[in-house]
Image 1: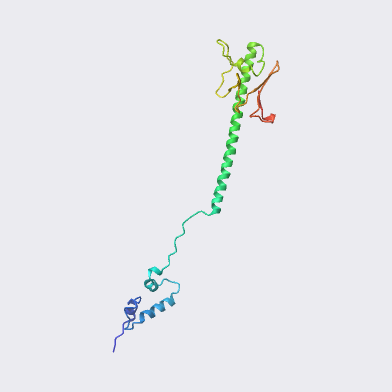
Image 2: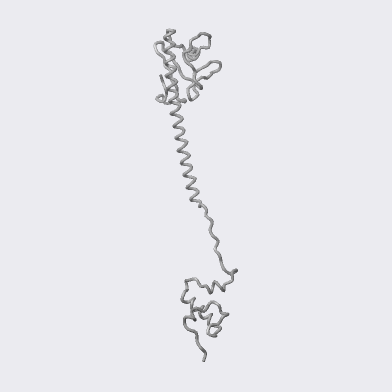
Length: 196
């Protein structure tokens, strides 16, 4: 009588190879493979993995990370908005800086004109003579105003005072008083002009 194996030894015997028959049956290994696949339809089957050739397995390539067109458009829009805000802020800062320098120059020129009147008894007659009266080049002549860098300009052969926008300061002598002003870069709004 042929002796059968205990149940524990039966389960410990390798069942994935059909070349090693169990209980003397050459087809028992394939039977267990079919039963295991039926009981674990969604699980990993080492039978199929062992007996499936490598060339027939399908490997899905990993998708490379990349930006979509929508994401690129959003980034470009954000950059454009930030650039516009920066340029507008920079223009505002430059404008305020030019206005501040113009006020300081008008105040300094007005003080020099008043000092000139105290010494000569009258204000400079015209805008063309304003620079030569306040900044004479004759030896021994009194200088009422020391030109700062960027304030001196020329109109042909005539020296004149230039505001921060590159425009000549306007001057008018009314005998008992004078007017000195800058058009703040040629603004049509007289409220933007900087006056003494």
